Image (cartoon, rainbow, N blue to C red; front, side, top):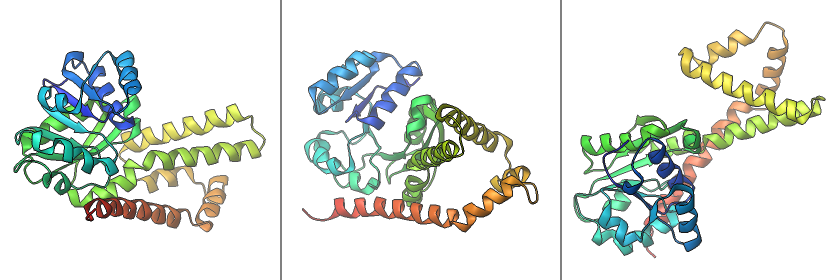
Length: 273
């Protein structure tokens, strides 16, 4: 629970995850606000969470912390509307993938503190990985407040902002990679003759159990992999095929593509219009 009032400006998928996490952690509903572009979306949030939707301008007036949850492509327009109205001492937390804190600093009053956050969708089940980076004017106190906001959603880590595009590629987009791997395992199980429901349960529980072992054992993934792999056994045969098909290289190429797209978003937004 946070003692600060929080407004999520642009309560889309990620923004909704944040406000839902705040409410689950015990933050009073009268200290959580949200804005939405469409009236029907605002009504949906009110019905689902009991919060009071506000306008963007009202959000700036009533909240201690502003969480910017709009799409990166909409951030410039939002800051053109609100930037000058945001007090220089109000904490701004950005969820906008690819956008550096400097993008906000250039559109906010001088000295405004900005913290950049990359979280991910397992926040829905309080298992997110949220990664924070301070802007030029964000202090230890601002980082502590931001950590307090995101800790109910899962684990929190701090990194230099120069690493955020890599974070976006690895953990921000990461759930989609895991879902794809599980999907592929299920389809393979079906082709091997298993009922789809059985294949799904086997793959999901295997992924969950493996993730918990990785987290709780403290062992290197390679050591855990080796513990499953007997010489000339079934696992060794399967792993040989994955290596032959370039699994590691495919992941490296995929993460590079995601990182490069994050960088491209920042470049596109910084370009004169």
